[in-house]
Length: 296
Image 1: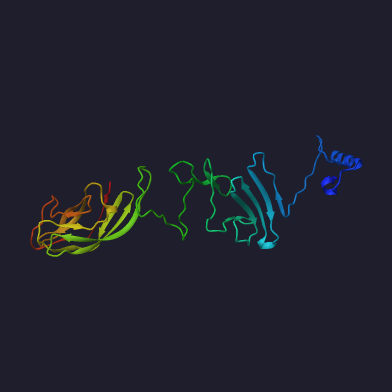
Image 2: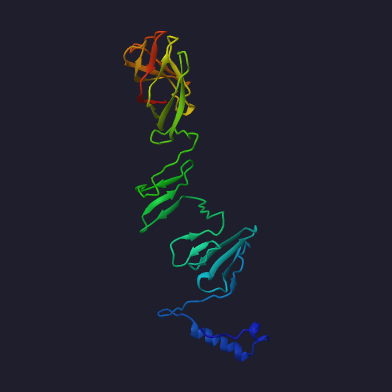
């Protein structure tokens, strides 16, 4: 494009000849139908400040620093009429002290502890990789978080873990897994001359608990009852459940029987399969077992 004579550059009014020359040059540079124009890249150095729009809402600037190589930065800065600032930088690959898009690399860099906030005022935030096919999205639907539209692969050696909150965030959705926990607790027996204890292990997956006692529990009976307390609230059923076990009464052989697990977490052990009572003398015990029940 031809150079123009400008009063602001010449610091004086234009002469008639300079004025006519401007029109001649503009006429020569104009685009006409059928022409084949060529375009060249426009480079900006230093800072360029854009004019505010008619509402005075935004103004912006393209800024380059004086550094070279790994520390070079080109940033776009804007401030709205409320004073809120925004900056997005194109940084060289070695620049690590500010946030921005890294040139010739494949990641966004956050230069402070606040990290990078991606906000969609309406609609989801969609992620694609290897093309334009959607692989993952952050949903805009209330109550819905991340949505994986493909295979969720947890096979890498540093992966393979899903963490649930310490307190269950229960869901009424039949297709939602809302809890998982593993643990142990110390069960204390009653109905004997002493109060023997034993370690119980449990795994809770959703609404199903697998309860295990790997060694026997027993002693000298002084009551017709046999109970075990100490179960944590997280694995107690809403209504009483039965699990099969083997028990000993009055020093006899171990026979098939059952345990009732109630909503208070108390295990009530029966002496026989038809809920018989124990003998208030001799030795009685509960054999090791592993059984599952529902907390619903």
